[in-house]
Image (cartoon, rainbow, N blue to C red; front, side):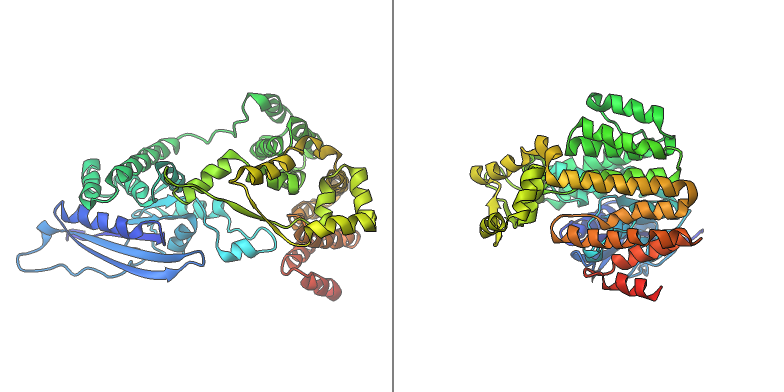
Length: 487
């Protein structure tokens, strides 16, 4: 093109992220450096919080004839965007869906963190949109992708994400301005300048580091010296395609219980090491099953130092403020029995008198203030039962269930690999604790009862996948029963 044209910038952000401030900085940046600027915004709804599309056009003032004004657009147009900024991964997906990101033209600045939609949160199974697919789409659609967890950098800087994204944009080189000119726009804003400049620098450095990392392959998941022996086992005994998943599993299970629990995890997967995709999926689902949720795990997570730090960061706690955290707890008799030694737990469930006595204290929920010494010690005492978990009633039951499931997977992997893969994936029904776990376990058992019939069908894997989808469709299992009845 020989005619001058506007620089087009679209910013997709959610409420509270400082999208309006970032839009103002971009306008000021252009106007202070020889450009005419126009900004518009269109509010919307993102199911999580209000979402807004900000649109900015910058036109070189030197290219405007005397007495004339350029005609600038009011909204982003697919195929015409130079820069698209997404404050969160689902917002990046919205930009891709609208066709705003164009190969050969668009610089795409994306924060890779997630704020899950209501549909994702309320799904019976794993209802999350596949983040890897979103990122793959972003790479394919953009001329240049600048992606990192900019929200984490903002949290570390103690401010909103907008200055971090502004820094990443500056580092991308997509706009004809130097770093100093970006920083001067922040200074002219006059509000929270010191914190914003700190966050800007973090985003700038992260974008440069991300660009350098694109030329090198991603490193394997680090395990540290405590788990080095298990890491060596993974490298020695399992195929490369499964090793990163196995490392994640080992980390999770050592954190959940101990190194011996993580070693058991590898032992259980050894018979599947030649099963290809079945092994990779089994490694993921077995790690989830072996780290089942119980009262010990819940108490452990709620009393960790990192949780208090995260909550303090989320509410932007100042040094002159106190933080109070209230936890609503409503354990059932069954959940108490689960963490007791197996014999004692069975006695509690079998004894009508004992159940009635314990039930008097569990009939109503209880609020525990973990930010107080008394409330913290209550949960800390439960978390301290972790070394005794191997002797608990729930642990014994889950190990037997896992062994039966893996034996079935191993048997089917040799004769019906498609069905074996879906048996592995059916584990996603077994999650949570209390009523949620009980409902999921009933549905899982119904599916496993169908295996003899499915094994005789060439499309048994596809059929089991459909049945699992029906089991996840509602809480009461009605959809699954209807599908089974229609077979």
